[in-house]
Length: 189
Image (cartoon, rainbow, N blue to C red; front, side, top):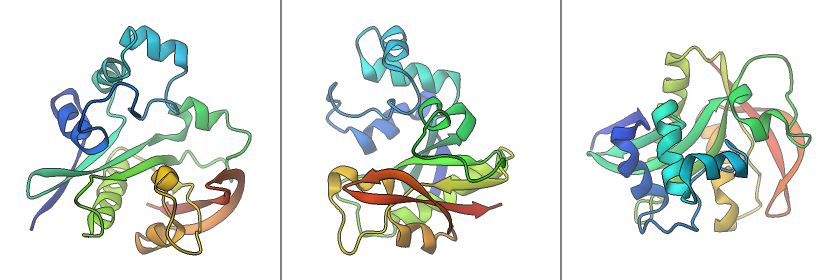
């Protein structure tokens, strides 16, 4: 089994879509809401969220896709916190300090590939890509559920998932997911 993680470019857009939206439903999430205001999504996509995300990928990779034996199996939305407008302006997830961190917004494992080690490879690949692009640290904003997490909010990740990838809790937020408080976890690079 071989793993590799690549930035989502226009050439890899269909691989990204196979992970997050294999049926290409227009109303399904295209991982845009943190990156762009609704007006900009409309401008870029002309009513299509998929076209808007394709346009984003032409400007700069919005994250990475992980492959297992050349099959796309995971997606991680990340980039410099300052380049993610909804996060940069958040009053609920405030910066811990002035370090120009990269932030993980979303982690998705493709259906049929869960509980097979994808998340570990995905996070290592995401951290590696951030490091290669000059990030001093990567942050995530997961929850610490007492058991299994509600799958509708699982994209934020869990404390244990990020701890296994070398992240440590460095703060708390006023944000919640599935009625659970979200943490600030960081991995220095």
